[in-house]
Image (tube, rainbow, N blue to C red; front, side, top):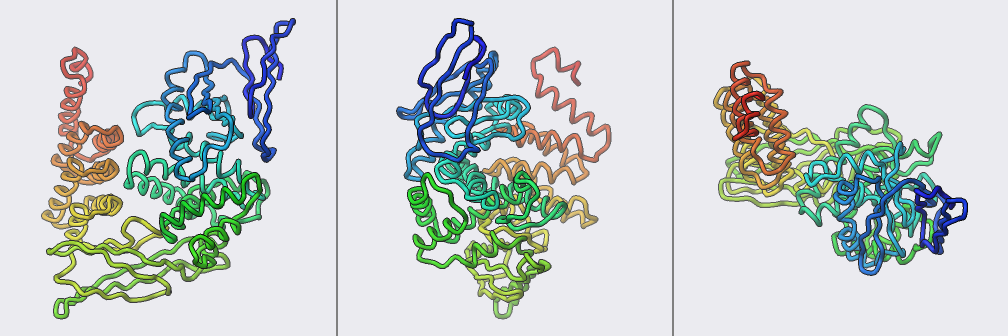
Length: 509
């Protein structure tokens, strides 16, 4: 590759030599000696600064524009840790002789996993390269890196089977987040993926993940493939268990390295390692479309101390949407005055009833604790039970969902005591919940309560250590419907906090 003197050429594999030519140009000689699919070839030429890093004895390189080195380092700097995580998780070391990431302008995608030489959109890397986790680009960097294994070593046979590339890479974004930030962050990431898919399914179209019906291959690069695809990998993990899941991924990589694969290959490996038939799983989640819509109602008989749950699947079946989704070992967290316990049920019918003996009236019922399955729930519960769930569930996502349900109370014409109970629960969650997403959800919910008490709680939320919570609280202050006098006083107080000991405080107020 011959370039101008001030330019560099980045490509796949190993840089064998760089020659300075007599006419003032330079020639770069790259060689890639491992087999790969042709769509993974990359050639980037530009005026770049190369930042260097390493993972074990493997060079790790970041190519960025002059003057953007700090932002690029912030964005890319965790790459070696990611390489270590994936290598250890897969029990399969990073399979190439180098790993480079290069930013480019006007890119059609956020990133592209060109083999050993990933290409990233400069808008994604340079605009989100801060220390604040709310603007972290870890998802993009970890996604493209994970393709080194799932997509580059083992590659989809055809566009219709892209799930073996993109569904897994999307899941690995959440898996790295679980490693770096914990289980709650993992589940929250998957919940966001599910929400993105639900939006596409509701307002655009519905299709199976595995599909060969398209006008152009790019038509398949949608939320169904990526977001639902990632959640399906999570559900596969939940169904077979952690040990089997990671062992099966290792066997898949070893069996199909330098080969093209499809979803049936994935299924056969998982069946072999787990000893289970998974036809039902792959059929309903990959070759069929949609998701279960569950209408749940509960009753409690105090005379026999029995809780009854009626579960009905209400999704409209069609040629691709099943009338019945199979959901094995759904966890139900039940709280009473004497404590909490978790039950498991198998959902296998269009409508069925489950009963549980309790020591007293239920104060909390969480269906599908820990979000093992993709679904939508219609499960109304009294305010006091929702408040108890927000205060007491061991499941962070259940607490987040409770905060969202309490937002509806702020909009409804309910008794003053009920609103007061909901508002105080949200205030406590905003101040003290251990998971940032619950605190942020509480801030958003408080916006619906038209009172000075809600405004004061939001003001306290602007002091949170996490930028995502502060942002939600500030947005709430902007949106909350209180008197202009109250809002003005609140904003003056806020600016006095933000610009303490500054002459700017008065002007900003």
